[in-house]
Length: 580
Image (tube, rainbow, N blue to C red; front, top):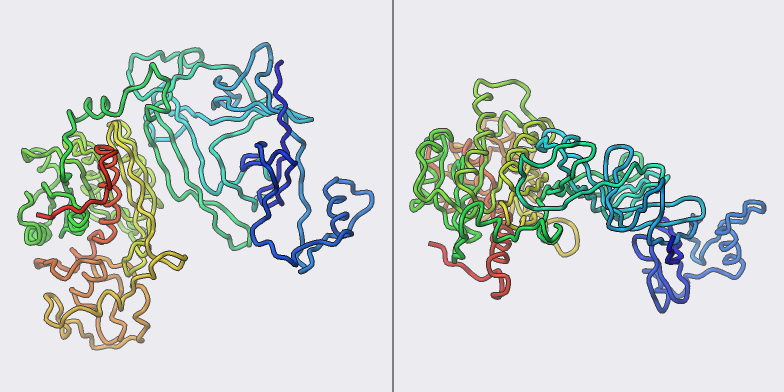
């Protein structure tokens, strides 16, 4: 076999930098040219070892346990942990195994039924390692994926991921989305076609020897957190399913983004303002944030008469309908096509606080499945959805059903739990946010948190910040009506409120003498003072709303993504837009 010799020293993620005079070790453990050894961060003039300590330290690296050496220490007394030096690895151009030749670029089926694309072949003193991105059959990925024969999904893990190469579960390193296998894990070579063309039922369905197709990529974002035991663990904080980009596909199996968009919804018109539709709009929290982000409100519907009256009072130029989703689907407005659409179906059946089934739960759950038909007819370039955190935590089957529906329509989708306090909402309110992008569209990212204790962020927005500027004459600000015959212990107003619900969520004024007024509750949900509410059920409208500040943060990213797609070289994406 032909061999390119590239000696590699692999280190644990927290080990000291080791380098020769002409190479350094990169984040993935491979050598690259370098002229010098960079000092580690935090180096100080008194941060050194004596000659004796250095000799002992080098001895400890040799792995010779015959004469134990004391643990070396720096002058300031900080302990240097013993380092584990793995055998050097040689990178190979190809390798013969069981009569077959494996080289980078080839696809391999593994003994466990998964697949990898060979990126590197590495030979150490005791084993041969093949590494590359992983692929799984859609059939093995649960109900969120369509069960299509011979269809695969590209699996990527990013962030703080616990590499199986570490024996200590508390050790983490950034994970590049590849897996490593030994030769014993390899079954055979396979042909896999990377394409973004729509699925066809006429493809070869011979499971053992037919062509395999990959059209999607599933990405998990991991984040490290300390556990009660003192060891670090990693959780999945965001999940993303995207259809392959033209750049990911093999040239002969690729469609351009423009072709994909035009095939789905016709020619895309580059407009000054993008249009917006709001399903299950309530009193207009989402629409308020969408309008602030520069979107033009086209239509909205809700089954609550008082909520739709509130919506009409605030957005009179928007076409609004008092109807169930099924009725809306049978009497669609002429301008049904919109660039951006949001849906917030009734979320009470999925709330973590809910323990008893209600009479309307079946109808509420049916609303989720109306999303498929709504998106199919409205063909939004980007769709968003907001739900209670309980949908992900306690009802994952329903979440998988929604994701499955979006994938069937050709939409890429990302979802995660967000805490509203991170975006300037004065309450600890955890919600599930989902963003989906139609065929040929870039999938917008989630907005970066703007508030918190970390450097560079704004301080958390508190109860005091939210309610201190309300004029005594403001609508729905009846202090006498908010009084209660009993008093509760006062608390610091420079804190966050509990999650506001349809009944207020056991929140009360920091003075302890009364509840919040309706206007104060609306301010805690970040509604502006000029937002009008129509009785009855005003507290329910406020508690059900998506905070406008959070909605704006999401739609700012959506608008930015659409502008970058439509006008990638026409100047800044944050140009001001005049609101009607």
